Amino acid sequence: MTGTARILAIANQKGGVGKTTTAVNLATSLAAVGKRVLLIDLDPQGNASTGLGISRQARAVSSYNLMFDGMAVRAAAVETKVPGLWVVPASVHLAGADIELVSAERREYRLREAIKKGTEGFEYILIDCPPSLSLTTLNALVASDAVLVPLQCEFYALEGLSQLVRTIDRVKAHFNPALEIQGVVLTMYDKRNNLSAQVAADVRAFFGPKVYTTIIPRNVRVSEAPSHGLPAIVYDMECPGSQAYIQLAKEMLKRERGLSEAAAA
Image 1 (cartoon, helix red, strand yellow):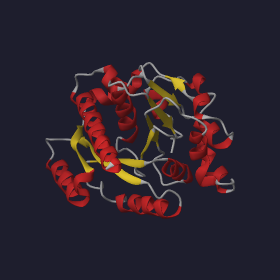
Image 2: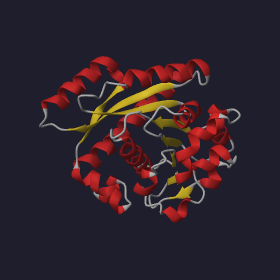
Image 3: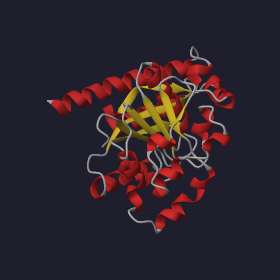
């Protein structure tokens, strides 16, 4: 959709599944291996922006302006402390975006059209979606090539996931025929808990090879990192959570290479 940039929505309508943590640390890991990455924060809570050290004062221009003011992505992007990683921050204005989108022209395509205005130089664009299946999330899905789904290793993990899959299928049918599920990543895994292993097995039985081999463990250092305005892999690269996100990035890039080769064949 933007030439060389691959656009991935990080989405799950259930909150507290590690969605933003995955978006921030996957973006950082990709930048760490030399990729030029843009993270678009579409969540009104703005946690991805906070986790990358973007102050409230630096969010005068935000992802809201992309959808409602026709602003180009490059004009809204802010350089982070991580070399090679930029972010379009979120602002409080996003809280009312869904209401404004209801009556907006081409309401499903606002973000897609903003991205079309120019994101040259980026290899990956990750979109941190709100924890809901809203018009804002719909904008992200319409603008994306694929969806990466973080899934918490908890009892209710698979509840509601069928709804997300149905939404993706509807977006494919009506707005974005090329959209696919790029992968499912299991998060907050507790190896001391038999339930985590059972949930992981159930998810793999349901999604098969779409589920990443890499599993993100529960990790205190990963939870601490946002309060310092740093991604976990910058805050403590050696902790198990950071190492897992680095492995996830490697696995994702390998999968992306496979998709590119299959498309070229």
